[in-house]
Image (cartoon, rainbow, N blue to C red; front, side, top):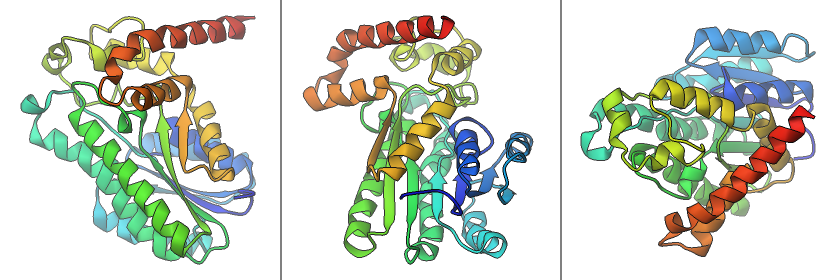
Length: 301
């Protein structure tokens, strides 16, 4: 895709994080933007941020796990904007419990948003995009769609599923509708609210004795969910940079878009050691910490 100017972009999870900054950068590039989020307050905050740009903006209070609401969305978008060129299936949540102890409602909550939301949105929008001269569907998986850790079974289930679905869909479109680009995004540690908003109680938090899923992106394992949420948001790549990497990947038609050195290193570990990649992490992570320290020092200069 050569340009986003005069395109119409639909973004789920647009109330914060990568979704918010995808909206800002797309509007800055001249795209009309359709904002979707379940949080009305943060949705309106994002909409307010776009007022400075001379583009059309609409917003929809939307739970992506609500199939009926998703199915009704394309007609609303086309009625207001006339077309759909880009769909960013970005909304995502997690919970932190080992599978044997996980509440079934929490499992269904994560599956409904992270996976069903992607499937329902893609199914709803594809008929309106296949004949566009340039179009793209961008599905957010995770580096946890490439590697696994304890305590994140449902998150892995959704993100591995998004990856498999997206890669298969990309092959199908390449044969039948090459103008419709399909992208799978694999972020590493991005400074968002996903950890703070996770459904997790203190018992769930403390049961991860190895601390792998909580400390993989941090120097020290946090002692509470609140501390984890703060550390996760403050220690990760700023979502505006992540959004820019995504958009660059769309312009270059990259089927897989990895965000961050951590994502690239963890992916490399899985490629080199498919069965024992965890054992390589103590060797990879110091490289990541050195890189982060250098960037922090540079930012202080």
